[in-house]
Length: 435
Image (tube, rainbow, N blue to C red; front, side, top):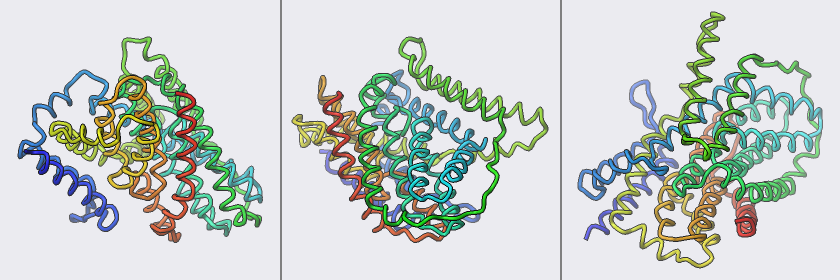
């Protein structure tokens, strides 16, 4: 019986990945530093393949299959949308809007709080939660030091908003992309179901955050009046237009002989090529291009594929079927929603999503779609219960610590538990009403 050794190897891999994130996130080899979480996942996947617990034929067939669940297509879709978001950031869009929001707030912290929450939410909806966090976190830390105000309310609001409003569109989070495409849910179908749960959850979350921090926001702030720099208008216009065209084609993709990854890849290639030609024509340095492609989360590729192999082994040995039996088929919105919320804080939301895609496949009809959408909600909102819940949490805490702002693991859990539980509850209630 191969079920036991498969389960043991998978559990050990999950535990070591979690411990690596907490205790030894990076290893140094000469001048280079490598994140340990994906190395451990890769070793676990190789071990499963080498001893036949994840049959190489099964893995290869799924990697080369012409289906929506093909992990290579999903990676292309995610990386294409990410490069568009990063290029927009390199063009100065995010910094410009952040500077504009802080200037409009004048000296009122209440206005500033709501303005930054709204800015994070809008940018997340149309770009990517990870990119927004990477971009706005250092800005918030820097601004708070200059204005001599507490950074915590703004950092918490930014991180939570980014991982709630990422629910709105299918492309907002790699977990959305995987679970939705695996269930053959298109862009429009996804939006119709998730729009109201996202808006209501976001408003409830904002209300809780304001009640938590309103006393900290009473005092006015003062900073020197600075000129808000307008980014390169041509590159910015082309970048925003490319993003909008991409979104339009993703909306109508089911009427076209194309797939979502083809559209996103085409738009990313166009924007990259236009930027390169512009920089060469104007004889500017290729810094924007270099920075953009350096910032891509390449480590996600081996991590995602390794977790895919691990789930193939769990499927092959019948373990996902057993998990499905445990979860059952009663009140699946809450069963899958709350369990995915908790599981992603044990093994991270990307492996959780890959696992739950297999687990929910035993369901049929409306229950299958309910479980899928509930798992998507759990994968996003679970990100702000603990830093382990998502790679975004790991990046966020690292960025904050680099800015010498005290924000411990326990601080994260304290605010996360207060906000995330009512937020996911409201989101699941709204899902039940609108699915």
